[in-house]
Length: 337
Image (tube, rainbow, N blue to C red):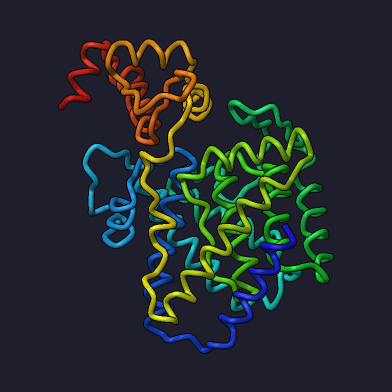
């Protein structure tokens, strides 16, 4: 981990030598990253909008009316983009991460849930929460104010550590508290980016394509107290954003392809697909047998592999069954249509 952190430090220093950065380059990259951060952060939580749809909603608002997509998903895109702009502005006011307050965090959360769940927007939870597929236990509701006070106190004391490490540690500690009924993941990724931006780092995106590794690293950190997978994933994301800016300054093609990895290259075993979608392996095998899901490839041992598109398809099948009350035959027709 020290090696990649050293590379990040060197690349940040190199970027700083070019400041002030060309205004047009900064504008273009920041707008692109806002869309990518919004798309990826929401998609990790189950939002069904594609990158293109996310960009359209951010640009045009609800008036864009993405056909077949829930209004909630569109509101999540609009709210997240507003939250990105909020932390960009806030980063110019907070001179260091030790000046971040609980109100700042509550304000971020309020933006995220406004119009979606106004009763809980910007408010700590008063119920217990559980993450499906995870064995991690979170603090009782009555302890949340105390835990958040401790979190802010901890953040104030992290003045001698590398800011990227502080941002990653804050991300992990915040998730362990899980202070909100909903929106914890999006809030902690924005908080991490607030810390990074305060210290002059570009926005960092945890790609939706890395969702499985991201979630697994949380589980390992929470149950086995091993943080290396989590550090490695986030450090790589920070370095990726630095590379974008440096390549832009050197008139190289921006490394957008590192974000927009081909989904079909990220294949999932049936157990991984089951964990992500919260369906049983038996159900997925049955849907595959019935032709609702397609196998993309097989391992050397003969195990079925599915592409990332299957995640959305599984969710679509379940939605059609639960909300539309369609039979499997009707689901097939709906999917074909």
